[in-house]
Length: 221
Length: 315
Image (tube, rainbow over the protein chains, first blue to last red):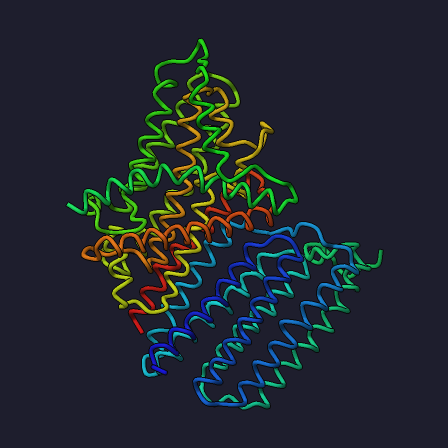
């Protein structure tokens, strides 16, 4: 198999993940956001499996399996269950309009490409490309966290950010498995904490809109 | 000599095939919705019936109203003639160019919108205003796609893009995938399909294209309907030609190659029509205020396609 071909496939999978990142910004309904997130995690699993194949690094298959099981299945299902439990499957409010968010997103992609390509001039083409894409996914996740007002979609933004980190990690050679597994489990722990946190916010304010938190000064009502 | 024959065949083919493509999409949609559905060749009968009928024109209508159906049909037909469907060996191929194609389609759209406003009914004006809103968003996206395609292949002529892709110099290019997604979104908007517009609607508040042509009847309506059928076929042909050109005959392929290209094109139109019907059945119509998001998304995909081209070159 030629170098060119493996590079193209990696490029394609990375771009799919980036597109899913844009999909997250575009979607307004909670369930659609969750489905898009699951798709992104699926693309991440594919990227990890492909890197395992290309780099002949069997431990990356474990990464792929973790991404598939935890991030593409467990987390979306848990969030689905939470959203249904909390009864908030309505339109998501965005702080910034979708059009502006997308424009900022494209600007962030351009920024990360301009930043990563000159800095990593010595690395191989495959790594540089994936790093640029991963950086974009991370920045889009951050953008999602600041533009959304609903706590659930903010958490999805956080998870998407983490997808980008893993993408960067699998494309850099020699990431230890123990780091990989600890990241995966910390995400699950974070998920649990967020879940409890959702119920607490909701109990307090009857809503998951984090705008209520801003004016809250800790007084008992 | 052959080039003239193939060009003539192409001119006839796009018009002859267009009602069948539309009818096929309608038939598949009906089946998916659990209805029996009219036969795929029903649009031929519809057009024939409309041509037999008397054309009723409003008192307030000017010559624009009467000229618009013919101008619209002619511009769309001409646009369809320059998109290679089964062979690139055509007389008009050197003149054909994606930017000219966008302009020809814009002429047709402009005249339809003028006609919508000409009679002075409120629905016509509303439809025209919405159509222009969609057009002002879809055209930049279409031009962005053209730019990224021409950056890949070095030309804006469809025939040469086909030759470039078939030459095998292009691998799995992410930019082309993004451009394809953007192109599909633009095609949906331009043809007034769900989720932008519903081609089967008769509820005034949701109509865009139908609202503009509400006043037409008889042969004028037949022209308008035929124009929108040809436009659908044109976009299907454009997507098939630019993004999946395999099977199209190149200059020097001879008659057998062209015939093979014809069969392959029919298969592609069949597949894309089925996909369109499935897509339309599975999705709900969008609110008017979300058009900007949808088509802005197409524009951004085109922009990203261009950005990724520079990445691939820099690496």
